[in-house]
Amino acid sequence: MTSASRTRTWVACLTALLLVAFSVTFVAGIAGSQRADAQSSVRPPANATNVTGGTVPGMSRSSDSSSEMWRAVRKGVKGKVSIPDKKAGQLVQSEGDNWRALRNGPLATYGAWGLLAAIVLLALFYLIRGRIRVDHGMSGKTMTRFDDIERIGHWLLAVSFIILALSGLNITYGKYFLLPVIGKSAFASVAFAGKWLHNYVAFAFIAGLVMILVLWIKDNFPNALDFKWLAQGGGMFTKGLHPAAKKFNAGQKILFWLVIWGGLALSATGIALLFPFQIDFPVGWEPIQQMHFMTTWHAIIALVLIVVVIAHIYIGTIGMEGAFDAMGSGEVDRNWAKEHHSEWVKETAGSKTKKKSGSAAPAPAE
Image (cartoon, rainbow, N blue to C red; front, side, top):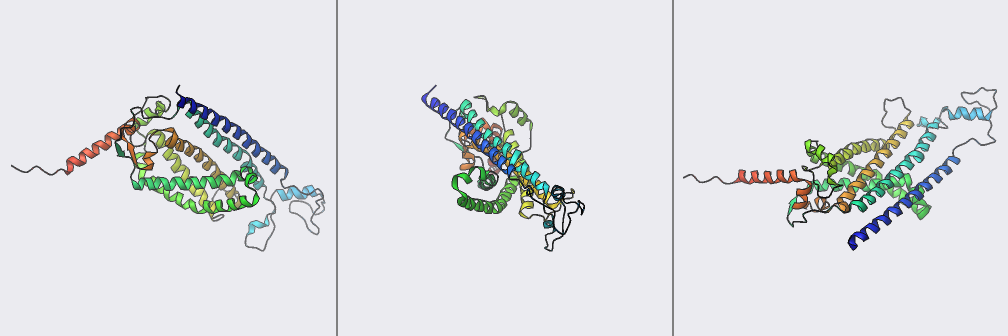
């Protein structure tokens, strides 16, 4: 083992250990905050009594039991209000407590574990596999992988997603992680800026999503080569193994459809949250319950996509030699292209040959 390999091994081991320690500390902090939230849940005061001069629907007028009154209130009794928002007539909405328990409980905890597990597994993969090199070395000759409009669509989607991911993670985890570090005043400013960015950058994300859908959908339908690529693990785990692939391999196609369907789900739920109570879904839910569902589903899809994109960023940067050039300059080394997208290289060379032969001037008549 060379000194460079030993250094890389030690760095990867140390990184993996630090990430494991951080994950345990982070999740333990979330669990502690959840216990504090549970202890501070809405409860009737110990000396609560019945409302003087009136009754609560669901309990008898003669009853003076405060527990009976609060049980009726927690069941969702509604009163009359003079303001336009008639939802304000409900004093307590118990489904909100259930939603908060889900959001701050399993959703936050499993989401944190998923994010950190993805990072730790990628660090371990790098430790074991190392960077995937071009076996035949760089040739110094390049070919166009993506044109300008394709790269604009990719980076519009990528940059907007990163901004949305960071601001969204702050909404879910900021009070556990960032607030204790920077303090309440600074956190309030960060949260306000993040919320503002989250609202408006969402439209850039939708635009980027539409662009890559239109540009790449024709190349992302499965074919026979994809099944062979998946059976061989894409050559990711075996040095020197390079399954044939067209412009996009099976892994990239899976990523494409995850981003498209996940992005559509994020866009739909995000618009519903941007304009709350404007869409009435025919499922028999109260308007507030509909918002609970939208926020929960929005968060779940976002966390899944963040994990997927972390893996994509790893492969496109330190994970694979020459991969970043595809979206950096748009030009990739010919040897890299032959090893990872051999069929696409053949198709590209064939199309150029046909174009040249078709455009050649006719031979003069004798």
